[in-house]
Length: 243
Image (cartoon, rainbow, N blue to C red; front, side):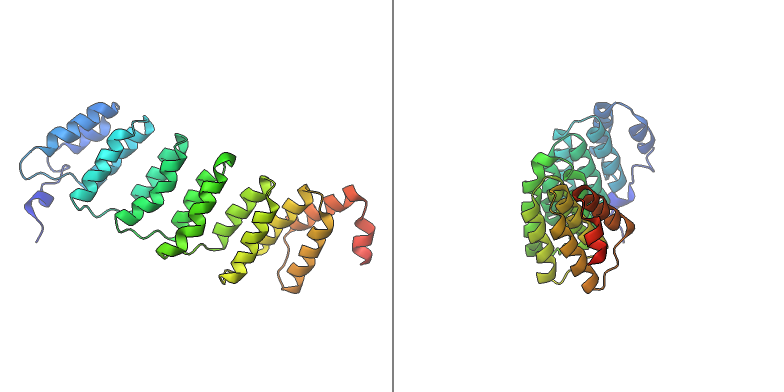
């Protein structure tokens, strides 16, 4: 049987409409706080989400922290949607450290991050070149929490390091995939080949293509285009086909 406080949903009391319609985040927060004081009243989880979005879009982050504390202390059952919102809010505000910490915040709420949640964090944060290493540090510790990066996770990071000119780290990640029984895909090879070609290391890119073919991976058209363009620049196209 549901608790009485749970039964007094804010939508039933007619609070949810003015709360969600208010364009002023502070007014919305005020309505939220006032209604909380009503006897036998408990805000729905969706109301927390709406308010967090409003505050995040208006870049008022301190009240968001307070709401997260209330969600935890009042033992709400939260969903991964909350954390997806938080990641997006923090990245758009360039609060990258807070965005990374969302991973640990999920654990605090007993929500186990899945590889797709990790990938969401990586994809949004990795575009900030000055924050690659902190993201890499998070990536390297996730297995301690039972979260195992998948092929997409590795591809995201390898692509970032290749674009940043850090081929050695990209190669270490590529080799780490085999150590951890994560199967690379055609994109994994293409990312490395593109990185090598940007550094004019065409011979190594050709060797990588051969390794790819030997392992029975099928290169995509972009992989061939990248390699052929680099060979043309190096005037090695004929020798490539002769070999």
